Length: 312
Ligand SMILES: [Zn+2]
Image (cartoon, rainbow, N blue to C red; front, top):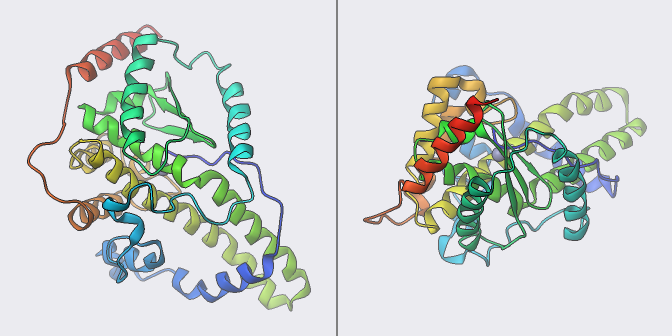
């Protein structure tokens, strides 16, 4: 939930080193027995140790709340410059805006823009950001490269308070700031480039690597989701919201719409997402007395959306 890759495939460059690194880490990608997966948090977190998730033995600098804006979020391999990424997102957004399900309601748009701005001001960067509502009952959101967020009305209506809505938006902002779409597209370009190079390797080696491709790509996407969950949680906290509402939202979605909506094909399981967020909050966030849970504005906008969706 909350993300779909829309970036164009990157050009292939220098595939060999990445190929070797991927092959070396292949053992960590092999499926674990079902019995070992029962306590998925530590297993999954350990398998993603280099991502700095809860459970990691490393003290992950990128989740150090005191270093927000100095943590290098969004850096790393990327074949797209920020300007190119923005231009790509603008073109995709222009196409998406032609769909008449994209809501044009000044009151709703202004409210969402205020929440997004509050979150961005407490995040790692201050990218230009556009947030719009799509009249669609599915609990989902789409983040295009360069800061264009499209939030389904179903996702807003699934939230019972502003903190839950802020969690959804913060997750998408984390995708934007981490530049996940273009970075993942760049990594995929490298994986495919490496596989092209396997034409020169013995048959069995090429065969095994071809088999590994979907596992590698899935792992890249899942780690992006784990990262967006934790960074989003931190932005939500820094903006003053109650982060316990994020797992509460996922639990509600899982209960009412099922695992596939909560987790989605490319996501870690819903249970793992909830546990990682709860562990992340315990580990990275100081406790505090008061946080924002709800506002009258949220209730008003939610009522307005119920009216608009019932008119469809
Ligand atoms: Zn996501």
